[in-house]
Image 1 (cartoon, rainbow, N blue to C red):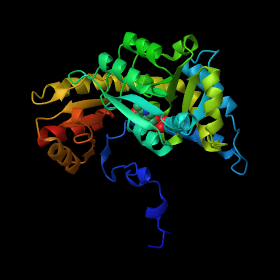
Image 2: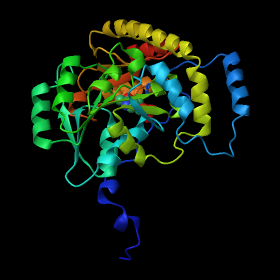
Image 3: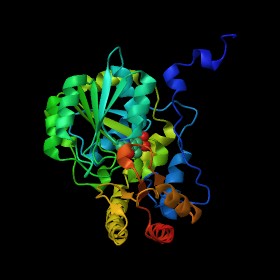
Image 4: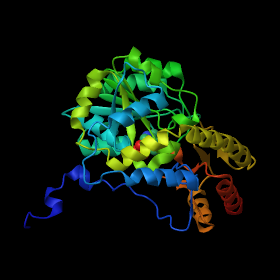
Length: 359
Ligand SMILES: *Cc1c(COP(=O)(O)O)cnc(C)c1O
């Protein structure tokens, strides 16, 4: 053959991947992606648009997004002594971390089921991926298995999402402290769901040389802006920062996120509402004897349907106008599992009605 085809040249591991898939959602109530369901008041939108009038689209953004970083420090209680680098979503930060660490024989270790981007980015950047199953009954860390896997694989980095996606639970502080101690290299705690839990390790970054904490504004209500932050020891952050593309945080994101952070009480209020609605949704779901409902510290809930029925229930709920996430088939531990984002009261009701019909 000619040798000029993509199949001849694209790396085999890339050819073996599927591109990140997002479900068609036109016309559906969207409870599949952990988005905040609330829009802004007309008045707030007007103030925001007024600000955008003055943004100079012909100029490059501030490469360090200095003002935004200060606002994030304040609003997320980042310790003064910690360094910070920003990403175009935490997805970009995950890629930057892995680009900085990639090399012959290097591996990423993470509990499984976990956030899919760790594996996808590991493959793209050429690191081995080691997934260590969580405990089967409660999705807590299987510490004997984690200790053994760390000793066997000597991972360059351990990622722990806490609370975890897609299971929704947090992990015990003492388990995580032990993992920080055991990690031979870097350990990254991904706190994407921080607005919905009391637990955080952000103050701990100053106490450990190898701990970085990652946050995002996505789940608090600004998923469209694409802004994540990674904080911790300057020795790590300064190196990882070298893999960052210049101007990765665009002018519209810088202006809009600064504006939003100046109205943080609104996002705090929305998070409190979502937490209260999560509690109600759990109660309503638990009334279905045939469902197993897992505890959640995040803005979504993991469910297990009766054996063999997840695909059919997912499809029926979708036909009735509500898009959730079907996890059946994605990991053996998630057999018969569905995941639903906590939406507005009306959206949750529509989901509960559709689910009751489907069951
Ligand atoms: C949603 C999610 C992210 C993605 O964050 P972005 O900032 O939107 O890229 C990161 N980590 C976990 C665990 C998530 O669930």
